[in-house]
Length: 468
Image (cartoon, rainbow, N blue to C red):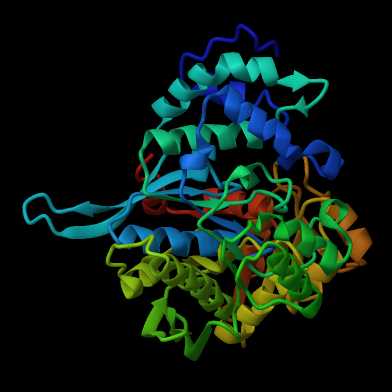
């Protein structure tokens, strides 16, 4: 559409306008290194007079665990009385999920703190900010030198402008893809966090762990502390070399900070945390899986580092914040009868963790796997990690989806069942369900999003929509 004189009057107009920018999240293959340009993002932010250097950020990159770790960070900071911006991607139902503000609400009569409230960017703010930005967006929509502005770049600018307007204390910022060239990488953070690195987006980030790690290590900045999840030797080598070069102190899980006395339960996991002379006992995580304890420890370490630097002066409620942290789609039980679990695992590493969770929490259940994936995923190594009784292949409503018949042929799944859409796939899974079964929906966030929309109760939708 022609957007030069496009009038943004309401939220639908704003959504249509945002969708007019090229969206690489809906494209499978594109020349990553040539397409993403930080110079373009900086020019955009400068043209929009967005002083992003004023944002006090925690910056995260990684293959898996970014969203959970970012959520832990946001809840921890909010529990200290701070007003926090949280920027994540992609989203489940509404693109405004990517831009949230968290703060503790107070009981006005007693002035005591209550629960942490999460609010999506209001629709009227999206409309107002886009209207204000539109003239400059059109000037920079395409230039010969810098190429095309993307949806993610425009949305990042929108987020930064909103966060500055909200006068936040801190922002927790998750990279979209990679690290080095990601639009969020214009910031100079207070601390950097790199979660587990594994094989994903290999056509864009590299075919080896070292190449992928080099892209993720792009968020490491001079004299800024770096916190890393446990990594394989080639990855750790890259991080150590980059940190040494930039004089950035590197803290690695298992060496510089640790967890102990871990107990995994169906209703939550308990662990102790250790970092130098700092120790926290009997922390409880409601998110399932041992890897969530590692994610929580990354966030906890960042809090102690910021405290030691004199940046934090609030009274962080460590136990309460870690316990209350929740993020959708991470080994999430949607229904108990039939038992349906959704998980956004979408690469080899996350499917390995998914298998571990199944072994821990449901070792005797017969798995009915509803599977769909994007075209650029290593579907063979994903599927073979799940010991399923039945597998139902389907597709989701996104251009990146791989057709179920292609999955069947590539993975040589002669006994696989085929469903043309998510609704049919879930109905088929339910028809196969028995008392000792478990329906697992996994392979893509897009798949899980559609499944949740179909299966979530009206009460669940109401909870999800709070603050919108």
